[in-house]
Length: 337
Image 1 (cartoon, rainbow, N blue to C red):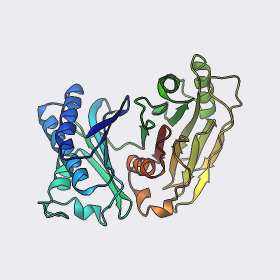
Image 2 (image 1 turned 90 degrees about the horizontal axis):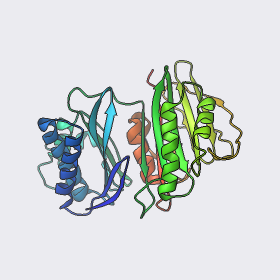
Image 3 (image 1 turned 120 degrees about the vertical axis):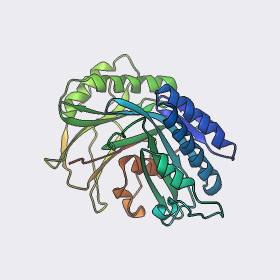
Image 4 (image 1 turned 180 degrees about the vertical axis):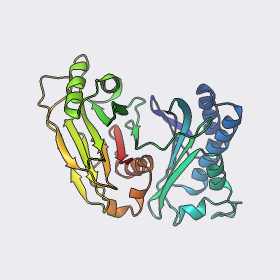
C-alpha cells in the first residue's frame, strides 16, 4: 500500500496488498485522535478502516481509499471512501449483511463496517466496480449532507489545483468548484484563495459572490470557477461561472441540462460575470466538475445511482470520468426539501 497523495482534503491510498489494512488502520487511528474522537469510537474506526481495506485487497481491481476528516453540526468525525474498478456486486444490500461471502470467508467484513459506522452508503455495478462511503462520528451522527465532493491531484503531484466549498449563508445554500490555473502549489494557492474568499463572502446571489472571489484573487495566478445556489422550494438553481468548470442539472429521469459559464479567469483582467437561472425540480441533481473530468458520462449507464448520496455519486463519476493527467474535482448537490 502506498500513499498516493496527501492533500488538505485527505489522504489517498493505493491498496495493493494485504499489508495495507494495518497501515490504513494506523492512519485512521491517528486522524481519530487528532479530531478528539475518543477511545471507544477510535476502536470502531479502526475496525472500519481495516475491513474496508481488506475488502479492497480481496475483491477489488485498482482499489483506492480516501481518508479525511469531516466536520458538520459543530463536531468532527472521520470519513473513508473506498473506490474500485471491479468486479462489482449485483446486490450491495445482501453483500453487506453478516454471513454473506463470495470468497469462502466468514462474510463479516461489510456487516462489521455497517455496524460500526455512524453513516454508510454505497453503490456497486457488476463490471464497473464499487464505491463505499463511511463516516464515523464521536457521538450522534450529523445529518447526511446535501452536497458531496472529492478532489484528486494528477498523477505524481501531492497538491491539487482543484477544490470545492459548501456553505449556507443567510439561508442561501451555495457551492463552489475552483480549478487553479495550471498545476501544483501555485494552482493550489489560487484555489485556496478562492475557497477562503467564498467562505467569507457576504451573502448574495452567485454573480455577486463570483465578483467577490474575482476581486479577492488578484494576487494569485487565477482560476476557473463557478458558484451555484440551490433554491429547491422555488424549483430554481442560480448559477454563475467563469472558465471551464462544467455544470449540469440531471433530472430525475436522467436527462441532462448543461449550465452556462462565460469565458474568463477569476483574479485576472475584468471578466464578464452573468448569472443564469435553471429549473431544479424534485429529484434533480447538480453535478459540477473541473476539466480533469471528461463530460461524456451518462446516467443511463448507472441505474440507481441518482438515489444514492451526493458523495457516492461524486465518487463514482470521479472514478469513471476522471483523467490521471490532470487535477480532478467532482461535486454533486441535491435538494433537501
